[in-house]
Amino acid sequence: MSALFRAVGFSVAMILMFASVTYVLPQVKGEAPEEEEMDLGELTMDSFVEMGEKLYQGKGTCTLCHNSLGRAPDLLTYNVQAVSLERIADDRYQGKAGDAESYLRESMKQPSAYVVEGFGKKGSNDTESPMPAVDQPPTQLSDIEIDGIIAFLQKKDGNPVTVALPSADAAPAVDTGPAAAPALAQTAEEAIAKFGCAACHAILESVSPVGPSLKDVGTRLPPDKIRSSIIDPKADIAPGFPPIMPEFPNMALAELELVVEFLSRQTGSQP
Ligand code: HEC
Ligand code: HEC
Image 1 (cartoon, rainbow, N blue to C red):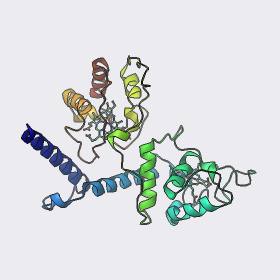
Image 2 (image 1 turned 180 degrees about the vertical axis):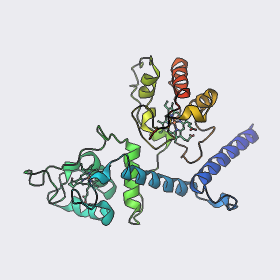
Image 3 (image 1 turned 135 degrees about the horizontal axis):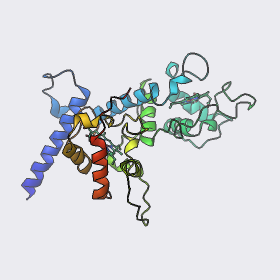
Image 4 (image 1 turned 60 degrees about the vertical axis):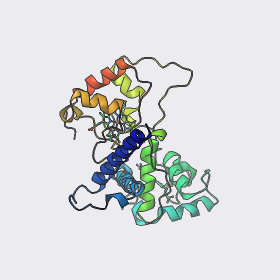
């Protein structure tokens, strides 16, 4: 019995290691004999930082304002992590952050907690930020995405990255109160919303890059593979992505089939 467990544990470890190595080193095939010595944690943090940079440049729309045109401070030109501590110590600081990581998170969720001098809304005397909270529509970044951006902002100046790597346990809270028996989704769209798939995947309105885009998944995977990806996410990790997709023990079979049928029809090449 315990030998079986060891064998299973070993192959899971190999799968995880293989997935991470392929993720970070897609081009250097044949050059990775030292796989055992690679630090999985670090490899995955690198990929997380990379995701944060993509979000910063893309979906997060940060560079619309944070650029060299003066609409907002250009975060890429100064050590925003180091400056955070000065912000917190400033008399004008209104927030609750105790360290740089939480200052950066607060800057994105409650921009008016501190308004960089000269950048406040007109007439507000630098008490109101023109920056929209990026966890709200239309940008609506998830907590995982915000953490990725923090990791990127920390890393870009060589600061230690203090955010925790996402894990399946920290997956976006799915809206199911412990007592409430959540209503059965009637359509695939409802099921996708109910189980929070869009927090990590490009699907419907979402463009999240945490997991593979599902907008063309019908061209890549047959229905039974789509089904097994949802039932048992750890069994087969898509190359190039971190193994963080959670399981959905509360998903009813009918909901699963709605989603599988819907995803099988997703063949669009999205811009
Ligand atoms: C609509 C314009 C706009 C967008 C979009 C925007 N910001 Fe800002 N941001 C600002 C302005 C203006 C300030 C300076 C005023 C203030 O401190 O709130 C600022 C301040 C900040 C600060 C504090 C900087 C410091 O030195 O204290 C951080 C961090 C930040 N933004 C991060 C982001 C990130 C990350 C994104 C994208 C997810 C983003 N912002 C999107 C306009 C924007
Ligand atoms: C916390 C983030 C997260 C959530 C939430 C999530 N996924 Fe994923 N998903 C991923 C990641 C990362 C991968 C790629 C790694 C892997 O294969 O596990 C993935 C892989 C997949 C794949 C395989 C895609 C391919 O191209 O190989 C499918 C299908 C999928 N997810 C469907 C879903 C569905 C349906 C939901 C909602 C019920 C969902 N996911 C929720 C992160 C997530």
